[in-house]
Length: 361
Image 1 (cartoon, rainbow, N blue to C red):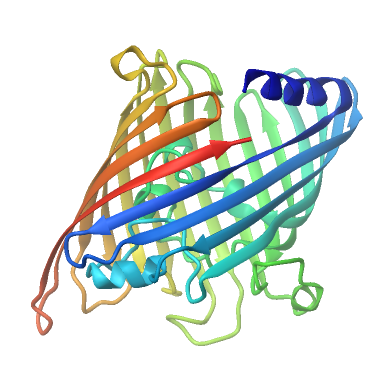
Image 2: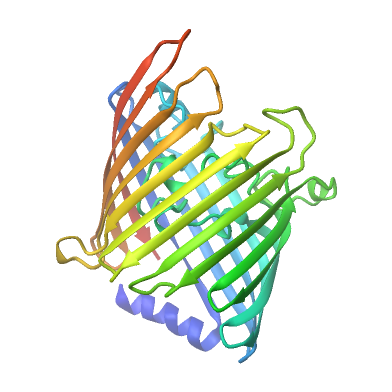
């Protein structure tokens, strides 16, 4: 309740310690197969700020996630039964029924060199999808949309595949503009810090430039361009090196409406389900006068990496209902369509209905 969250805020203000997370339960069913899909996720995150001065701050940050397939089908298996190239839920444990990761264990240090300017770094076990290519409402913890094409830049070959590992990130910012570069272990197991893999010297390199205005405010505007290079041994198009490009933007209007979009594409390496993806959306941020709720409509257009398959496109309508300060429910309805060319000559038209229950702490 409110006393718990106030105690958390007081702990951060007075002691520099923050801790929280969520437990979520996702349920989906589709029109092409009656077997339901159940998933849960538990996320624990925290920070301990040991340095707190006017011109410098430093802290340890950590994050642990545990994903569990509760039903008989993983997300990938559920998508296959519905005839989909991508998955209608960004959360997946394939090929196993559980997945646990220490996705974040890093030291973060910031230096403020003037008004609205400075630089910082983080080093350790990094979850780079949390720092690169973000678009607020198209984020990867499924706060606003469930379908993976609307929850991640799924056509960027490193997302969900090579995005957790030991590395370093440096950020410079000035008057709304920023530049961020990073290098992490490109072949880590994504579960825990893997020093022997890091020593192999095959890295994921990222760079992002962007502009942010009125951050977290009623008229927030964000524009980002993100590039990557994955330096791995192997043969293309599935296992070798590759590059990707992401362009994303978000704009709020008086904290009532928002529009957002993201385009992502891979080059040379086509390990993800899509080689190119465009996702667009709009949101009513105070539906029916409820300032804590969210009504979103997103559409996507994906070009599968498998050239024998036709373009896949779809839409998702979601409504996030904030029941209490710490409990929310989000029903959603998705429609997917694809026309495969010769020699497959198959049409896929699928409806997915789902709900996400979320408890924050």
